[in-house]
Length: 367
Ligand code: PLP
Ligand code: MN
Image (cartoon, rainbow, N blue to C red; front, side, top):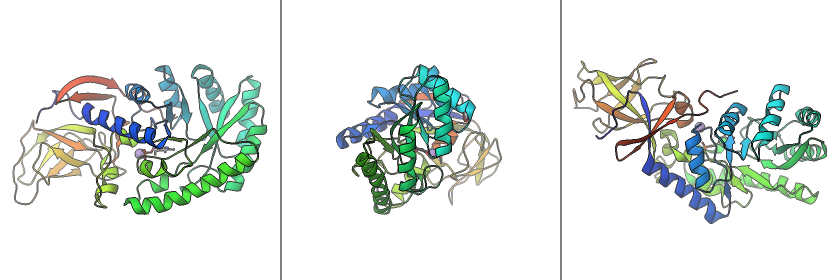
């Protein structure tokens, strides 16, 4: 197996696959007439953000202010912070970010926060661009009803210091529904809710310029629903085992290729049925279960966590002593976003050779 001579565990990005994923999503959005503002929470990497912009994205989404600040430091703009910001300190940082990165936007789901954010902006002689956040089923953030969202939007539009720019409606609860038909049914319900808010806003002269939502599990459906002006897809650049499963378990083929892998090394192999590798839960996020072993070991080899620093590779029935210390194996992480956040560097590889090593710009920037 050709692989670069890196200290492991090392995060690898297969450039050919990554470029095909970028191009596929860009072509899909273009054909459907929707824009892309990909979510940078997945990669936290300025180089990847620049590649997404080069492929036609209108900006980036960021989960946290710190993530947005790190990308702004790297020269990126068009940053939508998708989590509500609720403290005076955060308002001050949003105002500063808006002043240096064109197209900075925030979301809001509470009239008390709209009031406080508007007052902070006004005091700073600034104007913050705000999307009203509508909960469409996840219950994590967003107004609980279309009526609440409509009232809040009116409030934002009437608040000096704030500028209403549209709607955010992210259906996080629907992303990992297995099988396209089941996902479509839920997303059509979501779309009716979003369209209800859009039409009500339009009727009172507050037509939303931006209606943003969607993710990797729903992009193919969202783009055709006629409500979103842009998609905030994240994981498609890398794909992970968890996302692969929603297509493959339904007998469908996944629309994107696994481009993010973890290179690991066998460190001990004194048992017939398993060996130990140098990648445990400090190298692989555990929230979505187990990574898949995709190269360097017999087909059917399974990974199991073996503490924080190590992993166990269990050989398939009938195979013994397959690997030796120093052998390299490649894993597909179960969930890419939190796995990336465990690493400082992403190694870009083409044809098994190292092409570049990119810093994970916003690693750990969760505040
Ligand atoms: N938008 C928001 C608000 C998110 O939290 C996420 C990911 O969790 C995304 C978009 C991107 O979703 P995905 O990684 O499924 O493409
Ligand atoms: Mn994720």
